[in-house]
Image (cartoon, rainbow, N blue to C red; front, side):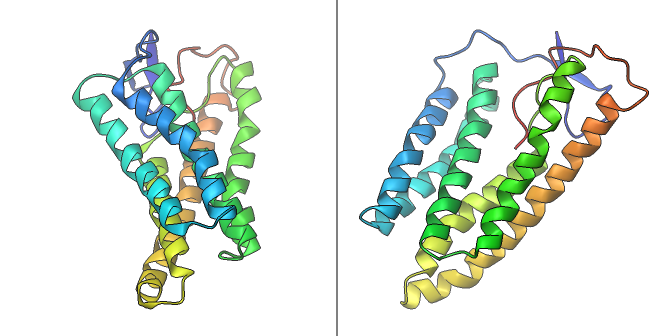
Length: 217
């Protein structure tokens, strides 16, 4: 079976990811990140233990980078991991936006702009399935956008405190936020371009079902 690269032309192919791998270090890191989502929400909205909430977000960012490196270095890539990794990223972004908005750390428009891209891309999924494709795979720009946001959110949490550390963190927090939002939507545009190339008027129904290696980030 073959899968398609999300950045290059859709005719470029590479080997499909192994379907049978479950118990791998990258998958374990992704599961731990998923378990950290409700923990972060409770820490940020319950006792407002921002130090611990920051630690959970920091772990999410570091493990997001580490699981990809480990998967490539030790050949531990899998279809399950390709699904878990972007799912954990999305849930962390959503959970953090909810927490920061509820606490009035970020404006409401930011809470709308970031999830709006994912809502827009969600409408492409049934069309892709109808043409025989799975979700569009993650590409580098999408991962870069996610990493910027995962750096921005803990810094925004620190910047909310009226002390020297908060003042130092504030410009970096909003710089990462601006870059993250911009790259997030740029990646979304590239996904839409690829979506158009796959299911455009001249494309016959019945594509390659093994296209997907995960959900677009």
